[in-house]
Length: 357
Ligand SMILES: [Mg+2]
Image (cartoon, rainbow, N blue to C red; front, side, top):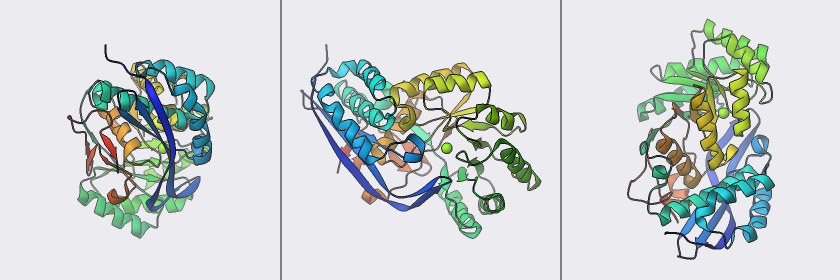
């Protein structure tokens, strides 16, 4: 039988400057301030995991994540790597709110485990495929910039463009029109990041309709807690509605199913951890709710983990895993290969396939 114990666990900050400041309805980020977990097994195999906290989303930041991770080291050292599920369950019970820290640990454990059994991570998730096509997000920028960016992205091969809305209605409509003008053949998805009240969201949909704008997906129109409000929006449009911030846990996913408030659930490993993400996917599929996968501000390591998850599970209708770091600044090499708009996972690299630079 193949097993190994965790001999050592190392925790360190993972800082990378961003290409461009990244603005959503609830704040702006200038650099990635994440954390890295390295587990070393007693057979010498190393597993890596990344935590990507974003305060307004999950209430964590780099300092809280580093502190949480450091407090887990003693618990992890000496454990069998094959016990990754039990380890994850214990950590979930103790650090319920520190989900990105837990996700980093799960990632490092699964990276080490799949390296030990010598399979790429996507095969662990089911091996449905080793490719994923992502959309690309156009930031909240003036219409001329949005139009130019859209044209450039369409030329680069992207077929779906996403943009953030929910700040100012007229600006949002102008930007959507500009994107459509720049990339007339691309599908359009919009994300309000909880920016609207239910009535405002329906009004926004009506205004889009007057301009013949029909997104293929409208993500998180209202507050994460207002599932009835999201249901109101869904009942007043045929545009598919997505639940993102509303779903962190499998219990949240069940509430979405019960209220019938969404057509899509957006899974992000940094919201649920990896193990619970598998449960959320199962709930959504059982309830005939479509799945999308998204990311926070992540290096190639964590982003690559989501690519493994999406490609291996094979049940994602929409993939929002666009990289935001200059390839030269990536702290990891190897792993998934990005040839816009496709991610490809090399079948001969075990685990996440990433090496520290
Ligand atoms: Mg979103």
